[in-house]
Length: 403
Image (spheres, rainbow, N blue to C red):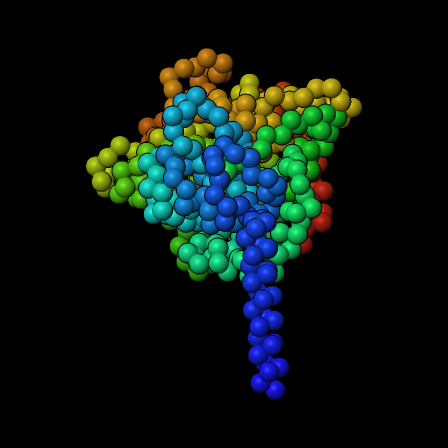
């Protein structure tokens, strides 16, 4: 009996060691093997493994500039910018990143890499406390022992096997060693842009802006507190550590702002912007410092109103957008130009507004006027969004009526 138990334990140890060794060798999350260069292509790291890679590994990498935000920032901010040529930049933005996750990542990056600049792409939906966490979000990723527990993980073993068979990176795979996404050519969208926009907008209406079961949008957490508390904590960290922290509201397509409107959230969207300004200036006053730069690129202009090709148009490729929420790295380059340089070359007039208490109300008033003009001049687009809202409302079964 004792010999049997001894052989059993030896077999278990050998199997455990084999699993750990295989996971370490394949490294499906790119967290064990050192990367020779930050711009090295991580292959083939899948998007579904992106969160582990960025949280467990990349937050511990030395970096001068750290980008945070949702998939809008993840996809839209490319890896090469002249203004950061002499700096080490990493992109920690990820699909569906709620603002509390952004805060955790900032805390880890400050603790581990002592970064001196953070750039946060602000996304309205990231502040909705009723939105479920992303499917790949795991709090254990924040823990220091996470790399070791993953070595023995069956899910890691499954991912290792998949990676071993998935030899070459494809469009849609994750990223370079610095976290910036492998760029897509977008040629596959030729002839399907309009469907891509409509499908994306229905997803936002059905599960993102007004998620089940409440079908509401709320800044308040059921357990108490607010999603604004997380951003306030980030602002406090920036002042305490004397880091350069810049915030920007992304320039999604004008159709995305119409989605917010038909969802009945225009007032909430404006409330969100007012609170961002108020909180930013309040925290600055408390430490007798200047408010952090808070840029607003949302709204209706020549870029955000880029024409969406007709369904039968298979030749036209959009320059700035892949769907109504996500902008291309080409537009991400203009964001960096506007935020970090004085050059206005190639930018629309007055594109990008530095928000403050003195101009936020007039800015919101201008946006309302621009929206009315857009609705009058883009009736097909607005009609499609309204039709999507009606279709979504027919299939939604909510606990309460949306507020």
